[in-house]
Length: 273
Image (cartoon, rainbow, N blue to C red; front, side):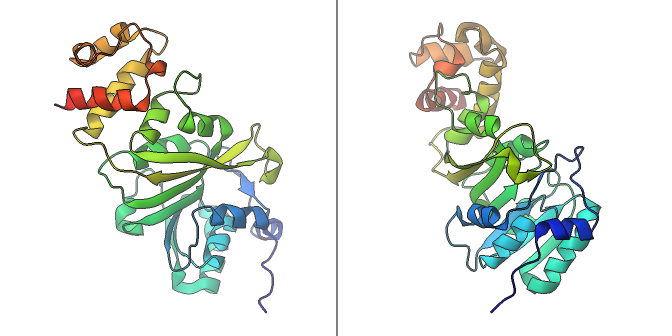
């Protein structure tokens, strides 16, 4: 019978670690909670997982215990000795890369069809998500299971005609399926953040035909850049967008947050043509 893992509080104390506010760190100490996060994508046995910001390795350990092979990118040098101890225990199933996740080529280091599972640093979480939702499709990842502030999670899954619905909602929904898998109370973290968190699970869907991703990005940037204005005003920022909307029958007296995903797809397709 395997001995239970060392309490994460002890690991953190032994290595003299503390969460860095500058790096957006908040550590989770509850190993049962971390195991629940690791279980969200389904069985990880013999699967490849890409993790960002493993910190002292609590979630990393849960992923390895679930049978995954993990590539973990960590920019905080202070955490590397704790992660190296995990490497000793799990061997080649764990690869540790020191670096900034915003600047690495994930497809090269994690391979195609990896599950991305991470308690993302709050200060780079949205930027990483936008990076992973962009580009070629189908994407290099099989699924995304990511911890965000609840406010950001709500924006990702938001429906039209709500305050949370915006550019991030469209980016996440026009060719993938996001859902909030679980909420996490602030008391689960060390130090406790000021807000509740949530884990979002995203799986890719098919890309609508005839839509260029860069056109969708530019379109939503223009429309939601002045979200309180009518489309007839905000779409002037993108050449041809206003005329395309009128051509396909979208009332330009509406505001951006009232358009459903299908309407964004139709408008982006008209502009892509």
